[in-house]
Image (tube, rainbow, N blue to C red; front, side):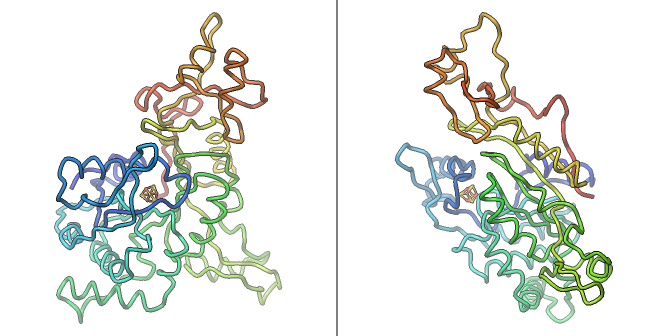
Amino acid sequence: MKGCKIEWVAELARIRGMDSKSWNPVIGCSRASEGCRNCYAAATVDRFARKDGTGAYAGLTERDGDGVPRFNGKIDFSEARLMEPLKWRKPAVVFVGDMADLFHPNVTDEMLDRIFAVMALRPDCLFLVLTKRPERMREYLVKQCKAHNIADCAGNISGQRLSFKLDGFPLPNVWFGVTAESQVAADERVPHLLATPAVRRFVSAEPMLGAINITPYIGHNAHHCRCGWHKTELDGSWFAGKFTCHKCGDACSTYDALDWVICGGESGPNARPMHPDWARSLRDQCAAAGAKFFFKPWGEWTPHTPVAGGDLGGDVRAGRVQIVHQTGQSDVEISIATGGRSTIPGSRYMARVGKKAAGRLLDGIEHNEVPT
Ligand code: SF4
């Protein structure tokens, strides 16, 4: 078990005075969308498997046409890893499954019951679950029987079947998030997240591959009726649905909004650059709606200002500088033909400097907001 290096997990742990950890009861996955193309977890598992060909990591990855490791859909579920949180002496903020997607179709409901049971048995820990498959997450968690299944599993695990009771459902110590690398991904995934029983919900726009209008999904009570009756009666409720308010007659819904937006760029040898305006826009939308905003590292690429007398054309040809448009497409051919200059308004130069040098400053400021 290692400390979790993910910046927003570490920041939550720091603020709460807790350890930060990653927990992987399940290892393995398969690609869900464009954001998976350079999956860090697949590369890590592939590397471990090459070192130790017979362990938990073996047989879970393959290479695609250009040699990039990818998960092949096989899953390794380990009882020993499942039980790890029950042995921790100190409470922790825990990222669940940094080498998997918990709601991958090959992770069975029975596995999920046991995983959530372990989380229920550590109410002093805060578990963060991030998925690209929120439809299944929603389906799993809205099944009314799930609270009972989880309670039964927790009772079986702890040996206190009769006396164990869940604190509440949704579990108060589990926050749920979706990855949304683009507007399409956000529009597909966030509605499922908002309809999932949860005490806190977040979006991770990483690697950010396009501009995202997140405003429809942030801002508490944005969907409540004029008279506020639903707000009064249902705030804090997990239930999501559409109603006609029987007091004021408004069509309204009880969707809770996002609490937290995280964004960042891509790392690794094949990393794609992010347009700075995409991150600025998320920052500004969160500020306007009162949602928390956390800026992760830029990734491999950072904003670049060409210097007079420099060799911009050479930098572009050598792949040290790329031009990113608002739409996300890079016009390397055009820019080489024009000596490095972009012909498209709103495009920005990004230079490949490496993750460490790129850092985490957005317009000179580190954004570290987390929900309380
Ligand atoms: S869902 Fe996550 S773990 Fe699975 S392939 Fe995509 S990026 Fe990797």
